[in-house]
Length: 117
Image (cartoon, rainbow, N blue to C red; front, side, top):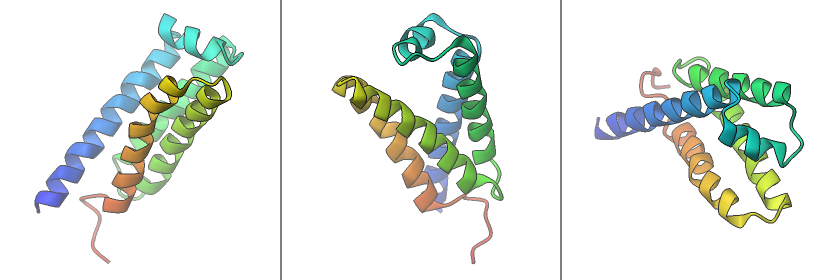
């Protein structure tokens, strides 16, 4: 029971962060434009990445799309980590790493409302 509550809290945190960061990308917030323009992302590409991030966050909420949403969000985070590492920005990669691990932990713990198999 306690594990399900903890997992639900982790899911809500991941969804909140995904929505927050995705919305910042969709709105082309200056910090997002600065980060992604280093990797030659256009404004449209940043917006598309934001839409994918928001979509993945929403998919995490539902048991049937839970794993797909987590994999999609983990993939976007991994992409950002790879771009940071290609630019030799270890600090940027280190900042993203806990969020990648959060998605993997959530997948391992499974959706709290899913029926036990």
